[in-house]
Image (cartoon, helix red, strand yellow):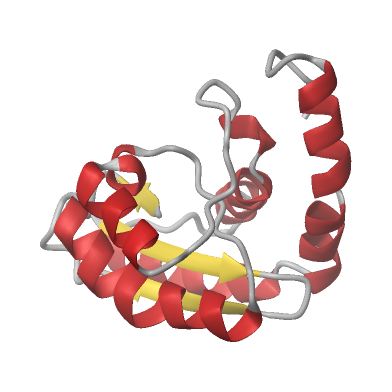
Length: 158
């Protein structure tokens, strides 16, 4: 989920084939609470997508992701979750996409001046990130995991 000033919320899924939007709140909700994460993101979109494509879920250990209600739900749905070190959020490829998105928005002229302009800018810049950039990040996952294992879950260059 991407949050700017606690107002715009976006969830995105990306793979080496495509990207699509999962979730966008209307701005009135400040946080995506656990039950909303389960009922509005996991249940209708993530679970069917993972089952249909025989994938594994990777998340960054954010509180809604690791809350008991969500972990039990994922177990009940037989969703495999990639073990992710609590102190290595920078290992997640999506964090590098968020950084690229942030840079693109900050370089816009004029810079978005209100929430609506910011939401529009996020949507436009998200679609403008080259698929090759995302493919490179996904293709780096094996190297990231090997490097992390060699560092005993400590600091890596990623």
